Image (cartoon, rainbow, N blue to C red; front, side):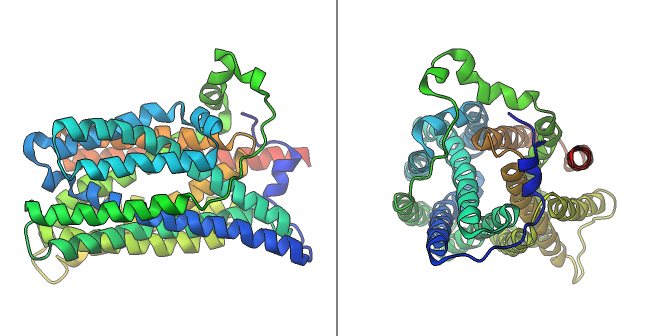
Length: 439
């Protein structure tokens, strides 16, 4: 993977004067934007169903810890398949990878209609594969659409990458709101473990999945041209390049801790926040509401952060601000938080949900924009590395959460955030120094 050290890459970080667009480029630009709208709505339908189903695993599939074990297996499989996801996406093409990726989510929801070790475990293993290619495909597809839109409309590339990521992650964060509201409505007259209620819920989720899968088919094909020929990809060494070369890149090594932390902070919400903060203060019934508030905050922040992104400088400021908010929450939970019986007691989890949603929106939009700007020659390999380290961190939290205390988890989170932000800031200084010395 080539580091972002050339003058072409420097141009991505510096605003250029806008040129007057002709009607033809404007048409092309709207075509690229349409694809982003379709992609965003497809993910909204798919992950509204999957996200809510994931939140329910620990309550609807309790026998033998089937639900939580399946989730651990899923993210472990996700981690392993992400190592070769970029190769798979290159072979299939981004659109085909996105369409195929939806099948794993369909199978997982279907397996919840008849949950057992013989249905859930194979479905989780296959979903790990599907998730790896759908997420690498998403990052590659969206970045390609942004670059094409910027080129056709004579716009600043960094700004369009940020704007498109803002729209996508706003829609994706909204899945927490939509999915949890569907669950709340369909389960409000019964218990979460009641067979008839959960069966209807997962049938509705299956319908959402089908709608999202159909939408994926309306995406246009937009595979970027590769410099390597088919002959170059015939030997094992060439096939392993997208997996090995990113780990030899200094820029990638400096971002990897931030990848891992972004996974940790997501799993923290699912596995720790709901268990130790929300449930004691609001009860189990309050989990859906708190997660919906988290999702709404995440969605609003994702859209705003995407709109404000224009290059490396803006990414540095926005990401640092999100990290600061999260470390303040972590330190407060570690040193000052206690369950209050007063008026503020029920409000604390909701306040934390809002702040944490802001941080999650920042990490999602800015990390994806950063990869699109710095690694334009190997976008799919860069996004594969993001998913490898994210999913590995999530898997570790799911497996270790029952065995370590909440205080220990907070200490791990604080340490991981400090290390990851330090590496990121060093990266931004290095890139700016390279550009300064080459100009």
